[in-house]
Length: 96
Image (cartoon, rainbow, N blue to C red; front, side):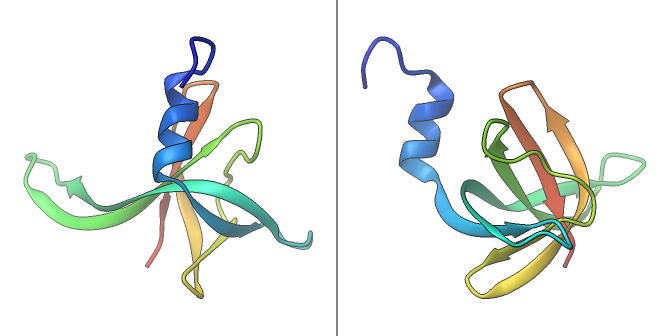
């Protein structure tokens, strides 16, 4: 790590996996994603009602939209919703 690298670069260099992302009808693109499995979904009274898979991408490589398809380990999962976007990194929740 050098003095000019951002923490996002360090995290992506350490934790990211190569995945295919596709926005139909365009061809798929290989990109680096950080995968967060088992993210808790909270109900109305802050009880855990389920768990989901979130993926993070750098905005300069891919900005998620609902309906994008992410292929991880041979499994295709559509993007259900965009969770957050801080201008550098965006996070989406996958369906399924």
